[in-house]
Image (tube, rainbow, N blue to C red; front, side, top):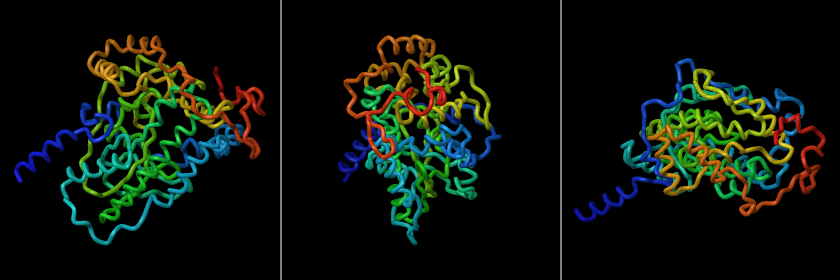
Amino acid sequence: MKKQNQKSDEILNKRRQLGPFPMEKLKRVEQPTTQITESVQRIDKREGVGERAERGDFGPVVARELERDVEKYPLSAVVRNMVYYLGPRAEGKVAPSKAPIPEDPEILSRHIKSLGYFLRADIVGICRVPAYAVYSHDEKGNPIELKHKFAIIVVVDQDYDTFLGSNGSDWISGSQSYRSYSATSFIASLIADYIRKLGYPARAHFCQNYQVAITPLLLWAGIGEMCRVGVALNPFLGVRFKAAAITTDLPLVPDGPIDFGLQEFCRVCKKCAVECPSRAISMGDKVMYNGYKSWRTDIPQCAKFRFANPNGSSCGRCIKVCPWNKPSGWTHDVVRWSVRNLPALDSLIVKMDDIWGYGKQDTAYKWWFDLEEVDGVLQVPKRGAERLYKETDVGLRE
């Protein structure tokens, strides 16, 4: 029995890294590296980007093109359909009695994380649910009252090799987003259903079905730091991911925020802002907005381009060119260490990123067809200037 226990301990020690990335080795801090004050207000889901575009806040061109933003490319259309199929699985009945499992939050946290990786999540994190992360109202104006204590966040990569073959704002872009949206929706739905079968309440939150804002959960769960793009950036994936969450009262242990030197790096880098087709990403300093001090993206300008992109479906150019968009490997691990420990080298790292050609399109990796659905018929896409609206209508910049 003693030898068996020793073997179990050895296996557990080897598996301290539960997933494909060494998240367990990151430096944990008490507060997110983005300043967050007590004045943060809950957000009304009706003020989301898609909701505003639909009601015409960004102009008639964007409102019209929003309807076909994803549908105009056949692959993104079918991948998004999976998200709609999973919608009813977000909630469900809780088993009348609790399962005979350990009540130790550490054991349960490891169990749930292992489940997430078993279901092919790339990263899984846990945090408490701050009150301001819960939307005040849903898309229909109904008040949201969510009282769950903990959130489990699951992250799925958008695929590095596909980004190599893309320019970041072409026809595969929307499919990359919904590849991750659909996968996280699937994983979150299964985990929530499993927790409910264990006798604990749980709700899945995913694309088209969020009751919580994902970004603050990513910060508090230590999955990323706030970056210049205006979202959370992970040290191993950059912003090349989408996320879903499961809120629950299952007793868990929060992971805590991380600090890997991103704030100083983003202050110096600005590559995403330089390369943004719509010039929506700030070149300036951080500003205070709704209790957060961070870089502020011009949301209307970004939305105008993404939803009405005349030469593609959606946009991920900022993801493509970000220096953190790299595969695993010792050279990039050294760079990550340098950013954290030698911030004086940040400018050099950005220059070397350009010299080595990162962020450029390599068509050898392009595997998809460029197609556009127009009036129910798939055709080879025309350039934006030949379309029914001008490229200047959506802020296109070569």
